[in-house]
Amino acid sequence: MSMKSKFRLLGGGVALAGLLVAGTLAGSSPALAACELQFKPEDGAELTLLRWKRFIQAEEDAFMKIVENFQKDCGITVNVQNESLDDVQPKASVAANVNQGPDMVWGLYSLPHLFPDKLVDVTDLADYLAGKYGPWVPSAVKYGTKAGTSEWIDIPIAYNGNYINYRISAVEKAGFKEPPKTTAEFMELAKALKEQGTPLGMALGHATGDGNAWVHWALWSFGGSLVNENDEVIINSPETKAAVEYVKELYGYMAPGVAAWNDSNNNKAFMSGEVSMTNNGPSIYPAAKKDAPDIAADMNHAKWPVGPVGKPTEFHIAYPMMIFKYSKYPNAAKGFIEYLFQPAQYDMWLQAAVAYLTPPLEKYEANSVFTDDPKLTVFRDAARDTLTAGYEGSVGEKAASALAEFIVLDMFANAATGNMSVDDAIAQAERQAKRIYR
Image (cartoon, rainbow, N blue to C red; front, side):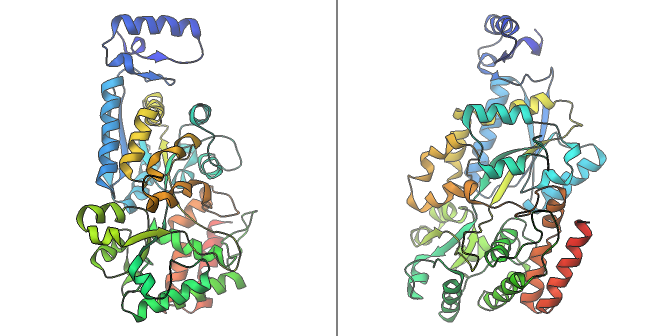
């Protein structure tokens, strides 16, 4: 029996589907009969998927269980390659350039928009998933669709809420009941934490996730932006200067070495007691519950304070999954993503990730992982609350390039460390941005 007759077709071509279903039930194994996919995999399909190395072991274990289930139910092997978070983008870019490599990549932010013409149109899959489990949150639509079009070039399979992680006792000792709601009060807290020997620390090195997240919050909270809604560079502004000066002062209250931190350094510093506050997803909390229950009991999470702009300016991590056009098995890849979102798989994955993953589709916001432990509830709305790469500008290739080149992050780091004056750091960011947005 060919693979064609092993898969149950859902929707469209009712008569043909009926015949194939009958064939499936009559001739295939019980396991393969469980494979219910809208997108029929190609005969002999086998996939390779590149993803970032886990921050939570249980998340990776659950993801690999889904891979195992997909193979068992649908007969398709998915070979998973793991790279560090900061290495996914360059490896995906190389694959796009040479038209060779993994069939699928699970990346960050607007990575697919670096090479949109190299990716499979997944509009049909996005529409199907929205109909089953949606709607999509607005940021997912912006991240998923090619700039200026309604064509989906990736599926944002989840988000990672990047919030303030803090030690309750340190904040209370500093005279605050909880992390404050305004940037002005946040500075006062940072100063007090430093004075009592429990400083905060946030990455100013090339930390793709944590570093980009907090510096964009800072820029936007003062009304600054790299570009406007027409993708015109506007970074050199009084609002940006105010944001950079704020971060330069904040840096003075941080733990030493943050200018060299990557995405894992802040986790280690928090767990070791080097810092009492940082920005991160909920990966520190489950690690502490496992290995340092005293820290877990004494920590919590909070939303970012609001700056002079007067509204939240959070920037959480989007996780897009994309399929390369050079793949021999684009339908199998679509089928895997469809399978991933089936309730039996996706709900299990969310639970295992302990709120490290936030869903982009409305149905899954009801998962109890966000309410069973009140310390994790803040992460439920990350996908709804986040602004997108490019802010008011497009989320296309140029925004992806600016983020990939750490233009905003380097601007803050250069000024904070004294490597450049505030004005020179902004001027350099402006030159870099104009080279991209031309």
